[in-house]
Amino acid sequence: MNKQKTLFDNQRLTLQNAIDLTLASLDHYGQRYPHWVTAYSGGKDSTATVTLIAWAINTHQITPPKTWTILYSDTRQELPPLQQTAYQLLNTLQTQGHNTHIVTPPIPKRFYPYIIGRGVPPPKNDFRWCTPNFKIEPMLTKLHDLYDQHNQKYLMITGVRLGESAIRDQRIALSCSRDSGECGQGWFQQTTDESITDTLAPLLHWRLCHIYDWIYFEQPKHGYNVDGIAQIYGQGEVRTGCIGCNLVNRDTALERLIKQPEWQHLRPLLNLKPLFRQLRQPKNRLRKTEPEPRKDGTYAQNIQRLGPLTMTARQHALQTVLDIQTQAQVDLINPDEEHYIRNAWTTNLWPNGWTGTEITGDIPIPAKKITTDGHIVTQALLI
View 1: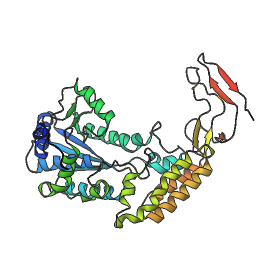
View 2: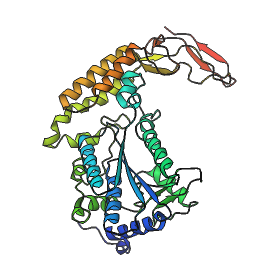
View 3: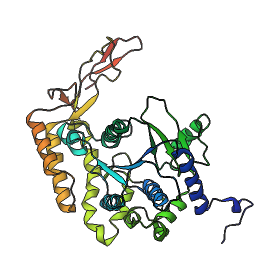
View 4: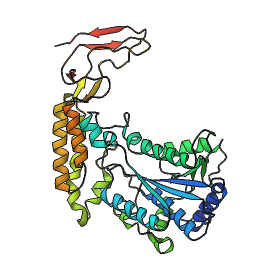
């Protein structure tokens, strides 16, 4: 049955309308800044952003900046089709004269060295250390380098869109009410003079269908082959994260990918999430038994908190991941990272505040808590 039309159907934004608004946004705000930078993740929204800007510059649709730099953060945790497509696009952009830079976190801050080497438990939503380590810190380091070259504030262009998440939409709505940008011309955030960038999201108004139409069906127009993205997203609402992302219940992007014959060899990667869940169990982690005073003399509320992975758990994790990468024919831990991990064990490396002499989390101990007046109370074991 056909959906009944409404009085507002003719007011729906077409792709061409969306492109026109984006071009107007780039010209309106872009001319204020001689230097632009785009944070490129390799996902559908950032790919649409990068290819549209490149097309607009190449075809003289907008006034180009003095420099435009595309920063790609290689977390070493992206699904192979996305990573391959990103590198292919970066190479094409480079040959066309656009500046591209690939940033990676230092080995101690990479995913497996941080977990298996240092012993930090896999991330979860209330302990999300991965995004700062993988993306934010390497990007900021490079941005400061770029700023030092010109000593001028950059315009940071992102692929943020309305409709990606309710929380983000609420944040955008609040900021749009006080910042100088209007949603019809992108989301513009002007920061303090001391900041190294202001931010523009020129695709804010694009719907999901616009993104897919531009990436897939407008390739003859923009000329960038990014078909690898379709192997992950198709035309559905598939959100991607790291391989085996521990922040979601299901790795839907990977599940979708391995249904395709050419990627079935990646099936062993499904065993990563169970490993991460296993590592977070109390028996595989150390636990504090006594309260530790803060600098101000008070005690943290979680006196007997669980902490880092035991050495035994780390050794099991390394062998498991190495087996998985062999079976899946992918590079999860390279030789340099494995060397760092084994050296961390040799030097008895632990997160700050831990020595490795603490008990494991599955050993029963009397419970200790902090009262509202700051006193410590102990509840004996009931055995």
